[in-house]
Amino acid sequence: MAFKLYVGGLPYSTTSEKLREQFGRCGTVVSANVIMDRFSGQSRGFGFVEMSTQDEAKAAIAEFDGQPFGGRRLKVEMASPPAAMWMGKSMILITLLRRLTVVTQARGGLLVPAFFVHALY
Image (cartoon, rainbow, N blue to C red; front, side):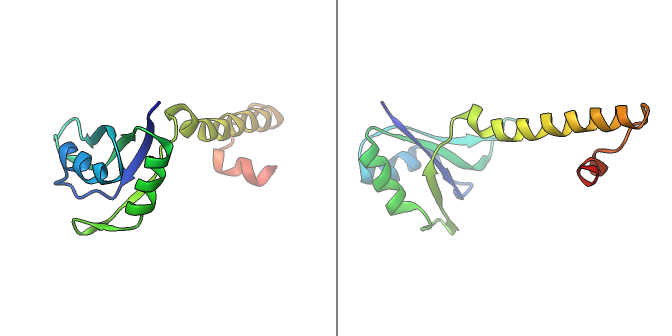
């Protein structure tokens, strides 16, 4: 099982190969991907690296997090699963929509702007 790391603050000139080479100093890199903008084709300044063991992933975090790299400071941490990243935000949205529905019904069908919802509860 590979352990995926989020790597932020990458210089825009960084390639996936260069990222693999850098993190290879901490152990076996299963994969390294710099995320590119789909329209311009340029780097978005972050990427993901998969290390083969948890110890290697922790070593990479310890070595690279907060360190300067190509004129920028890296942010390296364990990557969150995509669904978990949005779960909290979607729950907030659902709660706000429920409150807006209650407020709308309480006001006789008058649509109340969302920024008033928090003040009413």
